Image (cartoon, rainbow, N blue to C red; front, side, top):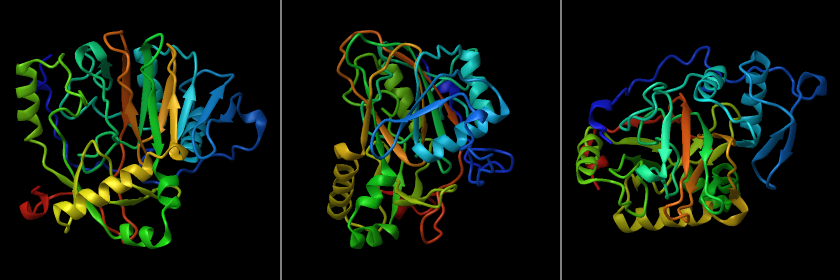
Length: 331
């Protein structure tokens, strides 16, 4: 796999008008009138996630409004037995927002450049907790993942609800982290994940290292205010957050490890057992996830489309930005 020719470094934030899943508030029809929708919505855990049954994803104006609202309400939606084609996945993505290129440094599908193929045989395992693409100033608002091939056992994905995790912190700790900022940067193994995967060749490793050096670090608030609900959530992750601004290594590492341990407590985590044809949609602004690597050499192949988002805003008004000061970025 050659990645160098696909490097895309769009650091600008596009206009946010007319995009359902950006920083603009959603203006959807009420969802309390049963005749308006065929879907049955069943909560998965006590804090987040919902399974939708009795319907199929369609590129329809009302369905788009419905899914945008459900995504905000539940942070994660599971739809079984959808069996979307590549074109249908992209069409659905267009119905709820603006798809981004597949990935800033990893090539997309040759026929559908919005789709990132996550093939375990090619190294796409993602076995680390992360929120998608937070090494960019405007991370995706949402992600849409389709299962094409899954192991008979193993290969689950876990999601953590970072809003519930924030709200469960002790009040003095919430006040403390509200004012913090964190540096996020891409790592050479951002696509492959941990542990190091033997499918990664030496040339690929060098190309990823070279490409990652071209992506400047960004600073995000540690606590993000959701652009639609106004509620706060933790916005750091082990995959891409390198350190907290203004702290020593001991202070930064210790506080981040405590937050990660808190965020991944079972009460805030949902574990999805995949079936072929499943679609999972999540709010990338208020979750992080982990693909469990417990299936050896068994085939596991997914495809992801991400929806363009806006910069993150903190409780004090701090906005995400590319880091200009090397003394802030260095670690």
